[in-house]
Length: 209
Image (cartoon, rainbow, N blue to C red; front, top):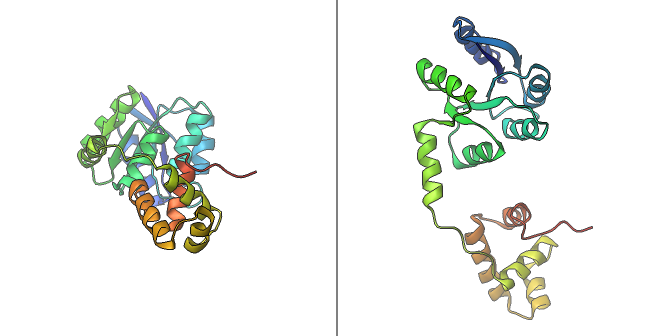
């Protein structure tokens, strides 16, 4: 028998999943959680075989919960069950340690097979998610930032305007704008704030003491 923890902020969804799996003798629903923090606490306490995890929840979201479960050594397999299949949702969940990723529109039979496979430690991906991951793998790796682009990004992170950055680096404001556009393209962002955030997350920038 496969033990399950159901995590979703919508009671109707939890009730539906509990009813579906509870009626099947192959499964036992041992608990429910309405957000990521509850999921982590329940996961540590119950140690289910599989955790069905929603992503978009108030407070601690699904990705943060998946990461915390892994950090705390909870051996449960996490199967994401959500309505979102964009890159901004799929990739962070997989990177955080999710065993599988399914959409809520999946047929009952597919969901049952996915839970069984996840319990065995097998990766499970819906077709649309698999396609997205393959496209990411096939994309050429982005070029690293040049030394000048890194200098511009560091000054922007310190709050410098384009004009101030130009004066500090002894280049024109137009040249700073050009370097900044190259930074945006390489980091896959559209504005200064996102560039700074991406710079920290990818290790180009370091927090200042």
